[in-house]
Length: 335
Image 1: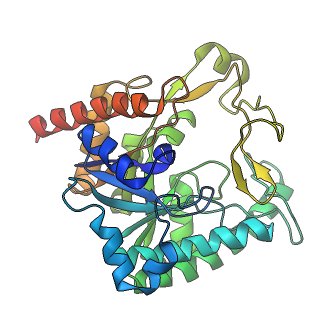
Image 2: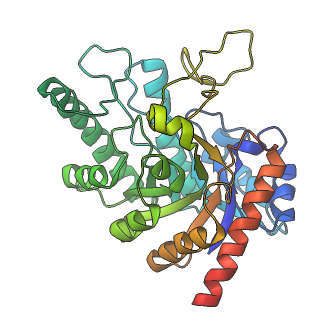
């Protein structure tokens, strides 16, 4: 398998230094953030690359001789947000990332399906968690119409650019499980839209990532290696839809998600946490995860995403890299 890192955790340093960290940990790929919720920190010449062969070649030259190659682009965001300052920008980031991928010789762009408001004129998103009542299904029907129109058009751009768009099955999006993937493709007839299999969001929904990979098969284009630990005491009391987030004030460090939206502080007594590989599931599990991905595509890019707040940036990547490399070595012995 091709093992790398999603670069957002290393946005605190220049790209050449980030590449050195990745190579030093025995990984060979870097998935570059190119917009959405986060700025394209490591692609400062984005606009120049789109129009200049010299700028493109200069950027690609940063990777020569490093042992690290670009392993896809990532513009996770909400391209369907009803607030124009967020939705229109994130939608354009998806389109620009597809064009950038073509310019860089890349064939994978990771993003999310998006989440509209619940009715015309809405300014806030509306995620229907459990549509037991008819009004909730009305909201879903309205949202699916918007989703289908956007992804039908985006699929055409991706197809023309020889790029596959991989949607992360992320809650607070219309498409967040296997059934939604099939519905999206049925509605759009898309050929170049599929899935980025990030195991973490499946774990906390009580889904089985290995089974999902085998079920979706060739619709899995790309993968992320991120673990989840279920905290049994608090999950038993509050369930996995635990909602104890705290709003951060303007004078506290916080991450802007576009417009006037900000990331909140994670619950103190959380039902579950994102953790480095191995802290939620052992090497044997990750070996099976890689085996399932290998059955789909032996050259699948599997990139670590580090969001474990108990570990430092490089420390957490190193923990995850050791587990992922051990799982890959175990897989090679089984093949």
